[in-house]
Length: 211
Image (cartoon, rainbow, N blue to C red; front, side, top):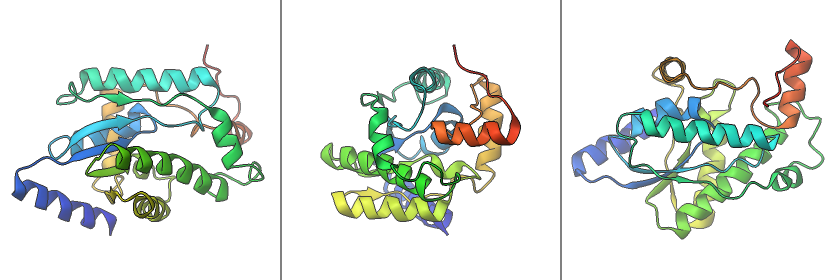
C-alpha cells in the first residue's frame, strides 16, 4: 500500500520535471544506502541524523561517520548535506521511561519512532522542506504501518508533507545488503538502544563493544 502511494508521488514528480526538497531521517548507513539510491533521481535530499536512542555515544558517532562515508562514495550523493543535532541520549530515556522492559517491536519502539519523527517533522517544517520521511521502514523488523501512521500524524502536527514508504518492498532490504557489502559498511548487531542490545545479547550471546 505505502509503496504504491510512493510510486504515485514519484511518477508525478517525474512528469513535473522538478525535484522537491526532502528531509530524509536516517538511522544508519546500511539502511540509508538503498533509500538514497532509490530517491536521489527524484528529490533534492538533505540527510537528518537524529538518533538519540543509540547507545553508547561512540556507537552513535561511528554510525554517523559511516553515513558520511557512504555519502562521499555513493553516486549522486556528493552534494547531500548531513544535519546532525547534538546527541542527547537523555531525550530518548525520558521518552521511553517505564517501557524499558517491553520487548523490541512494542510500545518502547513506538515511542522511539515518534521522538525521532517528531524532531524530523519539526525541522522539515521550520526549514520549509517539501517532504520528510525516514529510512526506518526498510527493516523487516520495523512496522511500516506504524511508522507511516506516526509519520503522517507528526506531519499534520507541524504542517509538512510526509512521504509514505515501505522501503523493504521491491527487494529494497536485499539491495541494502548488497550496497553494504559493496561499500564495506558497518552493519550493527542491534537496533541502537541499550535495551535492544540487552535483548540481542540474551538471544545470541555477546556483542562486541566498539572501541
